Image (cartoon, rainbow, N blue to C red; front, side, top):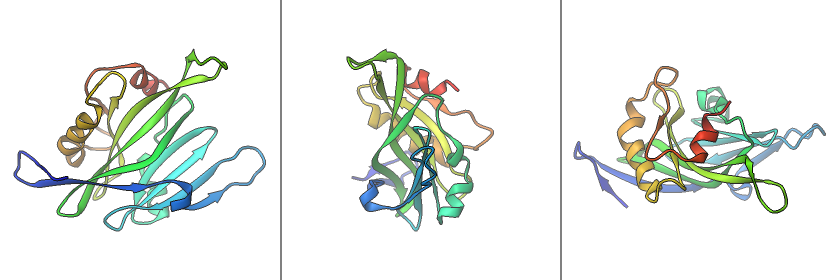
Length: 186
């Protein structure tokens, strides 16, 4: 669905999957943990690299697996255990993607379910794409914001292209909730 921006450009959303069945999966098979990476087709000639180690994931994007692994996003995870869902939303102008939005689940050790396991708090992360470095731009707490998807799209459209990885601080968009608090923990 197209969204006109203030600059008069038409911004669109499209979706890809990072489900193992849709990706090339590599396992460390080291017997210590079940770390793995998935290299998944993206949009605009880009691939999505999902790496999991010690029950924490990172998601990066690049022209190749090697390029994606060198991006700042390949090192951006969160202190608590976390995972992502398998749907990636791509924000693009004229078919050229400039940001992705992905839902993360961050474990809340202070809020356990009936079986004693930490509950997962949902958060949307906006990530900028090439040209330039790939990194997190904004976080939106899903439970604290009824219109979290719209807030994430607005953040992607307004912040991602001008965001300077390593210099600008990741923005919290909308109301702050537990997921964002957990994301900021290291």
